[in-house]
Amino acid sequence: MRKILTLVAAMAITGSLLAGGLVTNTNHSAYMVRMLSRQASTGVDAVYFNPAGLTKLADGFHFSVNNQIIGQTKTITNDYYFLTENPTTYVGTVSAPIFPGVYAVYKTGKLAFSAGFNPVGGGGGAEYATGLPSFESQIANLVPGLQTQLAPLDAGVEQATGVNPDFNNVTAYDGAIFFEGSSIYFGYQANVSYEINDLISVALGGRYVTAKNTYQGYINDVTITASPGQVLPGTVPAPYNGSPGNYLRAIGNTPYGASQKPSLDASAAALDAMTNVEADVVEEGSGFTPIISVNITPNDMFNISLKYEFKTNLRLTTTVNDGKDAGGMFEDGATKVADMPAMLSAGVGVRPSGKLYIAAGMSYYFDKSNDYDGSTDLEVEMIDKNFFEYSVGVEYALTKMLKLSAGYSGTQTGVNEKYQSDLRYSLNTSTFGGGIGLTLSPMIDINLGGMWTMYQDGSVTRPAPYTGLPDVTETYDTETWVIGIGVDLHF
Image (cartoon, rainbow, N blue to C red; front, side, top):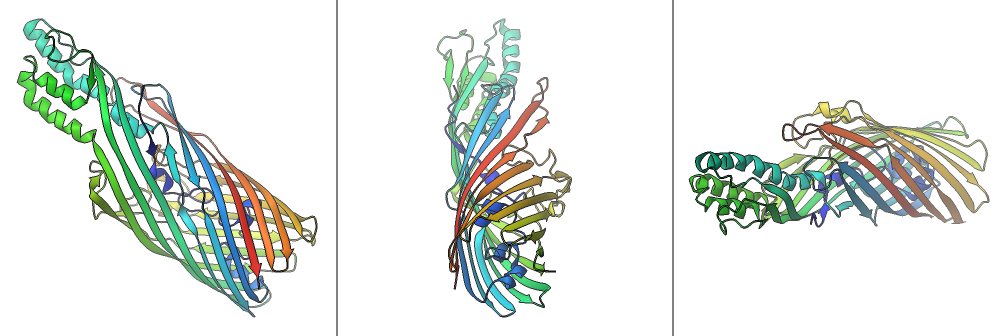
């Protein structure tokens, strides 16, 4: 039985937690949760979605405070031959009980000044109670690795003595893995909006992004099970159940392994290091995103928006605490690329009547011009086409106080198999949302909503690390739910 205790896939959460592109969150208000299409917003959440549309607000101060509770389940299946269970299913849970969106606007005449705060990337933690294939396979590979390493020694002993010690009869593995990670990209945004005339408004703004990833964990208590032949009773216990390093040292202390003792001891030391590692690492950095937007209102029925966010150049610097570098996985002082791609969004809002509002929108992410491998070289071959998101929403006012809304959003990812792994993958999605809006007074609006995201299954097949074995197929699936609540205040 495996004893993979807990593993949190930190790399899997450095991207977007829900709506948006590969590394960008766009679910930034409770109104968005209940309607799903807010690109053409002229409400307080337009601070993020459509800054130029803020000129449509009434003169005065406007505030919006939102929070979302987000839960996500990730399911990964891997059929690598040497895993204890074949295939093995790994189920991970992501939890983000606090996902804020805070906005403030001061509108006076043709001008609107605004500020906003939200998690523009990351924002949750992914915990896999039974590990992940990329981590467990490193321990599982001890079985074929030791079999391959010790087979020549068995053959040599048998040729010289006529006795096969069967040292390579390694049959199972065990171990404890814990790896905990968090990732959060906070965005601090400010805009200035100006109404040129009744038809056109424009806005210029920027977002300061702070990024922080943390990693803590260990790999230890790794053991193997082996059944060497009892040609020399007591020299190597049979069956053997202990560390792989001690197994090689025990073999080197037998007459049959004495000639190979220096190389066996060296291999044992390497295995000790590989199976006893700790991580305590922080990656931090910051960047800036220029933002421009245009809002067009041809008549009282239609509102059209365009927004362009420039690429955010982010370089994260690594700090390794107490030398805990995960066995060399992290380097103190190293720099890692974590850019966020440029994004173009467009939306249209239509009011056929005083009670009915219909909205549609799209967001286009320029992933092919972004670097997603963490190096300083552009790895365009990971991306076949740019990420695309589209949405539609409907709202109907039952009374002056109560509005009902529902919406749909879909995404089309553009990654290829070189991007996909159990630590990071992107799938096409379909999201359904709905909720209510309550107008308690001219000063207070409340938005309540929920949405459910389904992901199209994805898979990747790669050659096994050892010849003669079947290819390894890994499949990915995810489901996400969100509950959002927001309060808008107008003074």
